[in-house]
Length: 149
Length: 174
Image 1 (cartoon, rainbow over the protein chains, first blue to last red):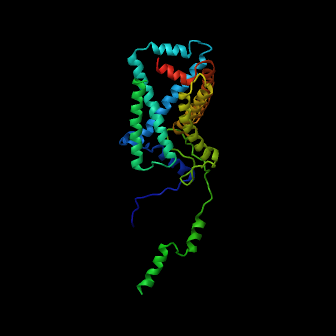
Image 2 (cartoon, each protein chain N blue to C red):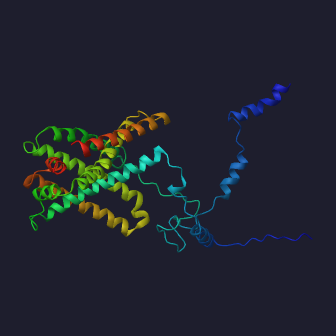
């Protein structure tokens, strides 16, 4: 008589679901972004969100800080302009680069997104061409804003 | 007569095969009455760290009811706000901010709405209520309170102080 090495157990549907969920708990998390080769497509996409959050964060913090003006009258434009005026030039220029680069990048890349939304430039070549154009425009406009304005 | 012999196969390839009713009947007979609710998790909790889903492998994930306010209208509104920032910025930069405070206010409010939508998208992606529960709801309310407060701040700064455009110009050239 042949001997069987495989056994089957009859379990209830609820026990089956429990077993399934036990296995689901052991599932690995899908690979994260850092396993992918950096490419213009997804790197610029990620930077678009990061720069947007950064600029919007500064905007929110600024607007919310002004709510304290009735309590601390020193929180106003005159004091801020005075404080910035007294900063060393190297610091002002660095801060301008740090602020202008995310802002100009997000603006130019935003225009790129609006172009895509009209259905234009949605080829591999088009995406790369507009990507490099956005990078160049951001750097050039940042240099202009930080050093020549 | 080879042509005649290949004909049935040719017809089957075009999807014109006759249905075997006995097969269909067998499938119908094997249908079972549901024993487990579609939202059952057998004591496991659906959290951010695991892959627990509601129901068995045969239960589809609940699809939200289609709603244009959350779909096409919302999408069009987002693009409209994004695109509106371009002329609003140009207009605010060209016109004198002191002479046209409303222009400056429009720019501030447009950027605020755009930012609010952007932050909402981040909550949708990273701390959605479906997975993060109370933390997601808390983030949602923190954003709402923050946006409301920022709106008041923009209004106050525009009416009592020099406004966004002039602030940017003066701080930049300070």
